[in-house]
Length: 151
Image 1 (tube, one colour):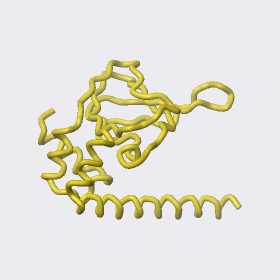
Image 2 (cartoon, rainbow, N blue to C red; image 1 turned 30 degrees about the horizontal axis):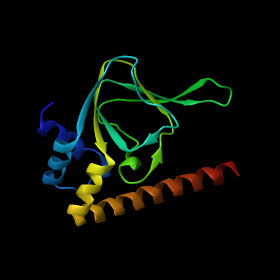
Image 3 (cartoon, rainbow, N blue to C red; image 1 turned 135 degrees about the vertical axis):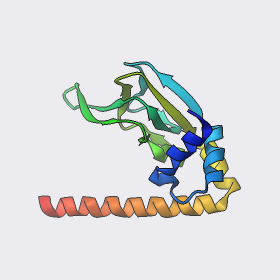
């Protein structure tokens, strides 16, 4: 994929909404591409997370350890999906395991790269903060609605 393709992909992700093409170009230029063969584990549940991954090609299954010791399929993620984006901002732990179900490719965006952008471009930090607050508010409202239905 060319740099312009990466920028177009990033433009579709809500976490980067409101960032300029120049911001996204810098992010894409500093990010790292990884190829995954079918069956390769990108990361495991419980591991420390210091980066997010954007899937550019292929498909990954997202699983979680079950209480009974087995594995539970949460979902599958394909091109245009971003995994563990919170790890770009803060210390985090992987809450699931991501395994390639076919030959795939991802872009790794490290916390260090994202923080450097936040430091150099305060407007990016403000936009990111606003999006995170909006996402958190939506998540809290959905959780409350679910609790109201269950209770």
